[in-house]
Length: 484
Image 1 (spheres, rainbow, N blue to C red):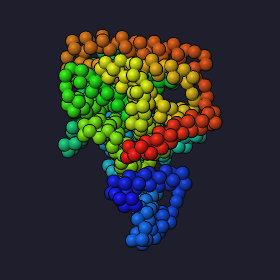
Image 2 (spheres, helix red, strand yellow):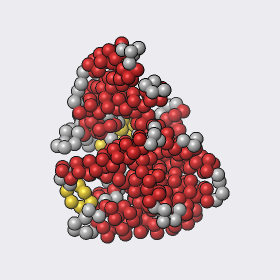
Image 3 (spheres, helix red, strand yellow):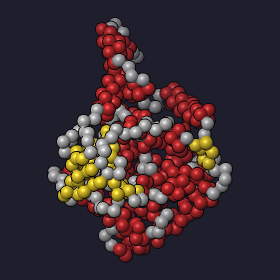
Image 4 (cartoon, rainbow, N blue to C red):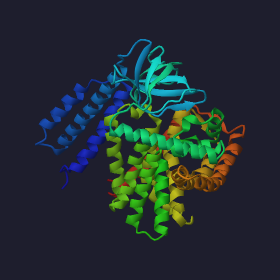
């Protein structure tokens, strides 16, 4: 019935309004009472005009977004811990980088705060260790063009200790079932990391560790620079694109061996869950699973067109839990953009690529990689502040290889950590595609014109092109009544 309010439409509009509230308050603080008053005024007119009710819900949701971001920003600015010494528990996997290690520690006297401690990597630290930290507790410093304080605040980190002296008072001092499981998972992850290092030489092992285990922080600086120049650094950041490509490969393979489509979708979702578990349930991997898994869930229930709405709901829910993600977490932005691009462009690109063979889902994988790259392109420009001229060509040669690396890499890590013979055999199969990947990176990164600074005008042109493409697709599907 025209003009009537359907719960699904109200929820969709309210979700978009909430995200808009978070966005607006991220740019400049707003008093939420203004939108609250307008929302209550609209509710007063609900009996006369149904549109006023929808407007009222949206204004209330906008108010909630503004207030929630304001609350999160205020909490991030509060720091209770001071001084030069404290004791606490390591609550995240230690991140080793050269001769330094980064520890996220929750002080015993301030359990609501987290402290990022940089210490020497010569002593071994583990998740759950009780440690004594000696060093100046400071507020995160400010850098020109980069809000480091907000970047840490999105992870709940409010203070830093540079070059701290850390002494382990008790190894694995965690209590409770969940910390115990997390600790066991990190221990198994360390075994997988050892299997990788023992059977595949660097830099190939470093690239695969970043793709599968989320160890991008452990890569050598010169390797990261090469990936940047070749325009493929994004493949080492676990995102929605990884999840979608791995799921598509799994579906294609399972259908090829005789499973029905519904069974193949369930198998793909199970594999994606294993992939997230291998990373130690990193926050970025869990977010990518939630976003990318929705697409396959839509396939499972026979409603692929509902995936876009579900993606918006999940995005709004994640921002409700942590509003600081919207502006200060590149992984959240890239995952959302990649999955959004795939949902909107995959049908159209699949039709355009009819000549590409679809053996084991090859056509779908290629279409997904192109769609994801189109929608993440402006974000990559924005975050890296430069443009790889060779990026379109290097990505075309490397990104379709990702499903193969994921498909072979997961069994390698799981089985290789248990049996050295299996690790050696699978490592040999993995080395050749990894060597090809590094060969492509070496060739393109060596070109003198490969990496150019991106002007602000060019950034806006790139972002505007994708936004225009999205607007055209949105309007086309809206007129056809098949978007929502």
